[in-house]
Image (tube, rainbow, N blue to C red):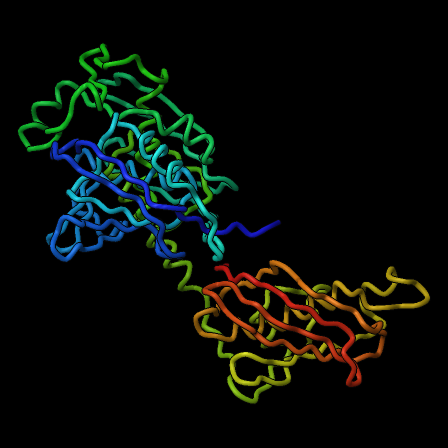
Length: 437
């Protein structure tokens, strides 16, 4: 299965409009960003044009919107633009604004989806980091709001909206993919209950609110410039908010998010739990004491580095390191290898593809030797200029030489060869991706 790579925007794109809570005119520009940088906001209206990371640790207030702050610098109502970027599969982006709040548009994330499509999306050369939830996570606000995340091979969300006195109780559930997000989630508009309008105005909020950018619920009636876009539009908008708020954890996940009566407070609390549990998980990865210089790694050392096991562990020992870029491994080929009975019976030959795999494993030992890569897994991405020159037979000792030609973040390029009795029997240029376990 091919490794999924991170994505960013192909070009800048700009959206202008009014903000919901402050009512200010604002110009927002989304721009490409380097791999592993995530989402950042930048206030270009301020003298030093400060940055604010889209990080749950930066969350300051969550009343009717999510506000991030870095010192005295703030950005309000960040959930819609982050939700759109996440839902459309963008991993890294810079979001520049000349005010403290993004444009509200029509109250949905659809304008941001169109902005992302206008900018275009490009693949980066670093593997995507997606955390697979394996144990349930749970948050209970104590006032009827619940969020649970349980294992699932996809990113899935099930959301129940419950209004005052149970009004407009709605349910929405779906896998989240870019196509589904664009059509089924992004168009859902924000909404407010009529009895909440005056208290919000008294607090200096929703100054830019109108029926152009929000649905107002009065009693059992809906006040809007257009009919509801979905019969469960409010539950869909809550799911939209949850996607944006959870991404403040800094990690994409696969898991089923089940929420009842969500809001920005519970959402960001769960984002904090996600971040805490991810860091706890990573702390359980033990550091590997891999020697530098002239040293030998025996099979026990190799078992600590590589995830492979019998019958697919194809290196018995690392016998030499040359600096940080070269090493030599050994594979003792015996008649007891599990592939010999079926590979040219009566004339046993080691399969060439397994020689390439042995090269990849030795190169992985070399790359995983670096402290910043310890605890990761090396995934084979491609093999070029592979040549097999001589057969490898039972009784041969395979010396496997690997040299790292270059490393670009998590991607490594290596030249490798297998040698028997001083003769090169196979060689190739391999490409690897290092990702978290």
